[in-house]
Length: 231
Image 1 (cartoon, rainbow, N blue to C red):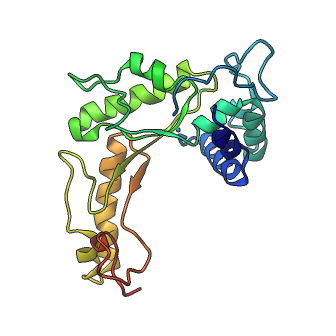
Image 2: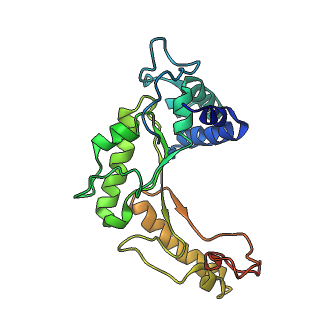
């Protein structure tokens, strides 16, 4: 593993991100992915001698009745450095495919290569799937991570949703800048309530939505993704 990744995993920012992922797991919400562990990577303080083994079902971090802080601390103590870095990474639909190239179904063989140490986030191939296939794919990803990886941490799945979920069969609304021009917050809430329901039906936990920063320079090429210059 490169020194830059080691430094990243040990940095304060990385620790904060890992705490967030662990807290999400404890709250019952998924957490991220990376390639197989680099040879010679050292196990964390909680890893058993002779190499990491699957954590027991009775591990404190798996117990929903325990306080979140206790579960987070327990999970972090069991993670190797490689597993911590994996929670800061993602698998993207266009670069590191988790689906087979013909039917676009979840590929266990690809998962073994890409998800060996877990993963923080997955960008699923929703543009190539209908809603039913997308939900089946999301379930397969989470099942693999929970049942086949050492720690059993699920992932966050995300899709763009600037003006409705950007997938086949979903409802497309006017772009964010046009929604802002209505000056009707209740209407915008209704729009994204629809988008959120369609996302959850596909197993999506997170969407990339309009930019909330106030846009000041119309020369910026993605001005339409904002709600404009009027706060």
